[in-house]
Length: 185
Image (cartoon, rainbow, N blue to C red):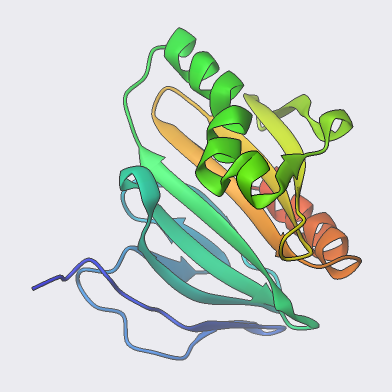
């Protein structure tokens, strides 16, 4: 029996966050007082009006991923992949530095026509943590992915927007506000 797969539907409304489902004891994340909180990592961030948290479930590499949509962009989604880990500062930096190549390999690279825009790869600081931002084009599907990776000594987090332009870049801008207000241990 798999108790860790929980889908929680949450609607963010101007008056607050309304639950549209029942949360179980085995939930992976929740929204309280307008903030999503991932149980295992304690990563948390605001869920502003207009955003809908669709589900949180198991994902690749032992992590868990939360999916959400913005009300005016139903074909574009944002995802937040989270994993609790114990890393040295050097290990966290090395993992962060290799993430673009790891994601390229995971998505199939040249075989699938998946490529990162070289001029889009940027090292930044977010909430005092080292981070990498990058944009990739999936030529076989016509989609684009916007990534922000933040790796710390305790947590690895990937914010990801996937969709078609110009919708994806608009959602990325909206997600940027959420990322800046995120608390990542």
